[in-house]
Amino acid sequence: MTNIKIIFKRVLKRPYSILVMIAMCAISFYMFSGELTENVQSLYYVHRIHNMFGIDEEQVGFVQLLKSSNSLETAIEVKNKMNDIHGIKGAGFRSGYTIFSQKSNSEIPIFLFDTSIIESVNVDVDEKTLEEMRQETEYEPILLGPDYKGKYELGEVIEYEYASYKVYGFLKEDSAIYHDFDLFSGWTNLDLYNLDSAGVVVMDDLTQRESVNFSYIQFITEKNEFDNVAKELIKYSLDNGIELRVVNRAEEIKNELKEKNILNSDDFYLLVLVGVVTIITITTMSVTYIMLDKRDYGILMINGLKSKSIHLQIILQNLLIVMLGAIIGWMINQKLYYGALIISQTDININFLYLIYYKTAMIFIPIIMCLTSVVIVALSSIIPVYITSKLRLADLVQTENE
Image 1 (spheres, rainbow, N blue to C red):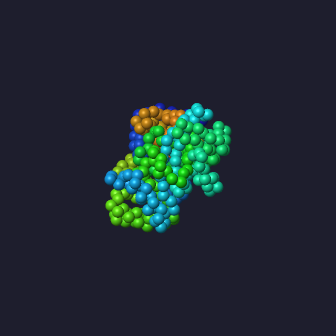
Image 2 (image 1 turned 90 degrees about the vertical axis):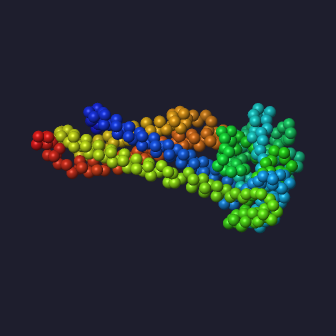
Image 3 (image 1 turned 180 degrees about the vertical axis):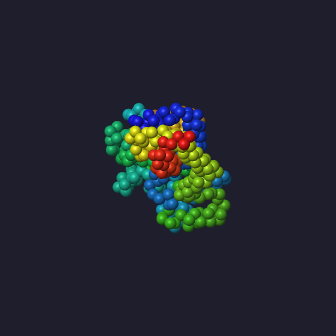
């Protein structure tokens, strides 16, 4: 408590220079947090999407039919060809829509998958259940999210205007699906990031479903076979005059990480320079304060204050300056980037982008900024602490006239 009182009096003794240093730290942390926000969002974005795959992304891809080749007939032709290419484990389509359940009095988002591609999605369906779903002919077999446990029983039928669904099981918590097109574009605040409150229907053939987007054919390859499969598909498209592109999911993720890497930012070296200048400024001001207040330190030591307490005062004073600057810089970034200082948790379970914003703004950035503050304080305190450790009591108590 004594150390805090002494620091408080010392701050009041020279408020303007302290405010200048706090302002400088605030500007530094505002620049840092702004650049870091984009980078951390991207990293968490990638992490979250990575968890949406049931197998290695290197084995997962899609074929997009382009322009004049974008038709149901061409899609079926290409899909059938893909099933004959060595190295492809399965190829198929995806679909999705929403049904209304009278029993739960709520809408249930439904996602349909061809059986051959279901393992690419993080839904963890065992082979026995999958085979039973394949054999179902009377109803559409559905796996419900864990939120529906207790509301529906195994074998129960959900009646809907256009179809009836028979419950074959429940998904594990945090089961997820990725986009059927490009991973890092097209997400909106209406997108689910998990299937806790949704359902998955697995069928052997979706080509008769009206809601299927035939522009995208999903496929899975054997390990280390994707490049060979892609070459075969490109050759087939050229030989048959079909316009298409082949996309590997792992390559999408690598490209996103490379593009959003903070080390590749145009402002990265400017941020480093600003950080170094901040550390040097705080160090210089701390040394200046020591020289100005050394007589006070000497009197305190005569009255029993140990040198360790002086070191602690220097560190706490620097910590006060840096942390206040960090908080102000973080608050400015929050207000300008998100429009609010505090982001509510209300919507994090119902859309993907909100989850990324919340985690970044309220958890990751504050933690990183706190750790950065500790590093800056440590580096800026080394020289001042070393200087005070070398000063003798006689040096501390001498007056300016002496």
